[in-house]
Image 1 (cartoon, rainbow, N blue to C red):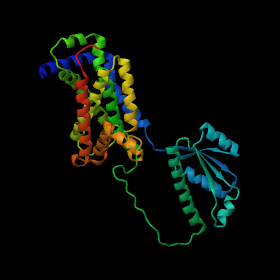
Image 2 (image 1 turned 120 degrees about the horizontal axis):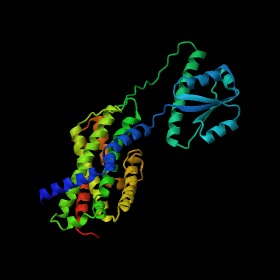
Image 3 (image 1 turned 90 degrees about the vertical axis):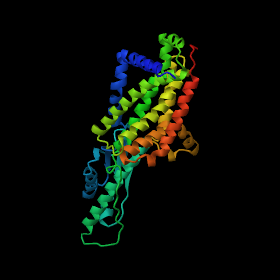
Image 4 (image 1 turned 60 degrees about the vertical axis):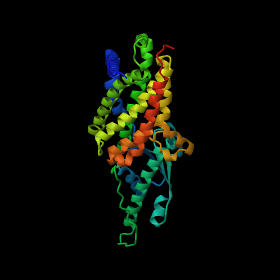
Length: 373
């Protein structure tokens, strides 16, 4: 193996990449823009729930019940309705997220010290959001019940109870950005590295420079390594850039070792870049390479645990996730960012990335042949 030939191929690849102004935008500006967009858009935090009230009681108690929602600073009462047809129309059009229906005997039943039913109707078209909205609603109702009991029975009441002292480690405020932003870092690096390398060899063929490489003494392994090194350097630079944005813009704490994170990134890139080069060797045109890349990106994303827990997937699908490098890298990124864990905890993920990367990279080398067909 000649490192001189590899060095010259790396230099040629850099010149070819930076010659096109569009590539400069893709390499440096695109990951930062996507990081900012995804970092703000992808989250499950609920800050504004639009509610409509259908109050058949029109009493002090029913107004107090409505005030309990407005006082939470999460609910926004947008409509006071007159009949159920209005409620159905607003839910159908997506104008409100929930509707609260108060019966005519609401105040009378409460004054008797009895339990009164209140109907809560939530838009379940987005089930994850609906469950969170219902959970917030139940907490408001629970607080209203406690306040109403103190109002009706002002005497001191002592009784045994269980006092839960809840502590949430690694994400005290349960901010969804703490969960999503480290994952977005991993996803962006995978997306960009796959897209760039999947057209690397095809570009040589379409530009007519593949004939020149064929007549040189460069070996297939040297060619693949020379093609990979520039993208490793660029991807690591992108990784550092998006990590800086995550830490200083989104204020995500990096508790663990930045060196260990960069080492994990190199192993991850071994898989993604090798896979991109493999796609490039089996494709005939850049369009075909791009389509094949997107065919892989979506399954990788869905089966990585980025949004959906792997433990909730069918057992057969869980086995499929073992060949997904993004699955291992997500555990590493979140573990280093939020928990500060080291190699003694994350070694299974590092081994998984190393094995996958080695197999894919060797496959790309064995698949590449110095010919035009």
